[in-house]
Image 1 (cartoon, helix red, strand yellow):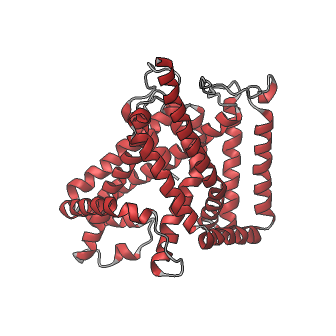
Image 2: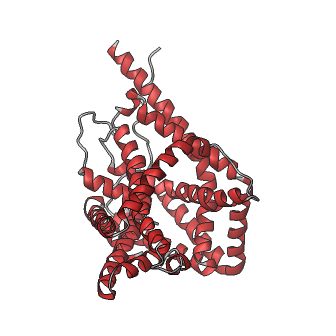
Image 3: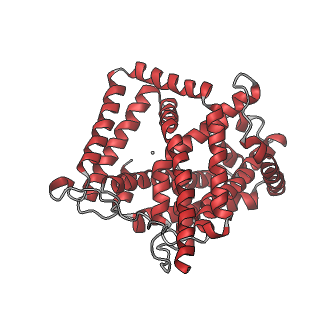
Length: 393
């Protein structure tokens, strides 16, 4: 019995005139109504809405630690399978087996890194309006160049040997302990359990909440790349970059404290200020001001590159998968205002804590969707291989 051909086209209706020309009006209007209701709900009783978000976050911490841990282990297993299995890894993303990637390796990695590592708007709107091939790409390139310059500074002038020692030991320890830690759930009431909840579980939920727009954006810029390329660059390369980043900068900060130069000022400062404190101890005030300004620009580009990719994905979803739509720029402006309104309302409801609570709550349903997507991906890849063998026969 012949295997049915893969589903390549979805018949999604779009409006043919007016402001919503090229967009699915039901999806677009419904999502706008939902966002508006969320903002109204938050602003109608700021204290109560903030407390409810916090309560939902705490409930997820108390009841879903095991679910998140085993879900992430499943995601990792699926990713490693599609990367390492030879017939899966060779498959190209896209319908043209001879197609060429749209972006250079450097720009491609820069956009992957910027969209995945950044955190939510006027500059983002301008960047999104210019498209993936211009504003998003160039901002990502600038972001990556600044990141490498900062790393080079710490590599040359920081506690290099101490940091490299930490890097080697850290990577070895990570690889050795990852299998066990991926399936271990500690009691939240213990010290280890409290750490796992506030660090691992929190960040897993945070990235899952980012997955809807980051994943689609990465798929958009990775056309004609193989699954193995996509997996290795999307998973391994950013992780290694962060290992180096934390080792060089964090190692330099620890060395300044252990040597008595910082005298506790780095450890006592907030997480957002520690990098600036380290720079202040390494350079004279004038040079420290220059490097600190570069860090501010770097952080700004991280914010913009992640936010503009979100705006582009929202537009693409509303336009039934089309990237270029006649009224696309107008809708990007509308959605940038809407996203800003949501963030502003959450800040009023509790600042960064309310934003993190909302992200963690949003991750709960989508974490289950990712499980179904992973199963569907494996099924689709198996059927693709079977079709190829059938075609040869």
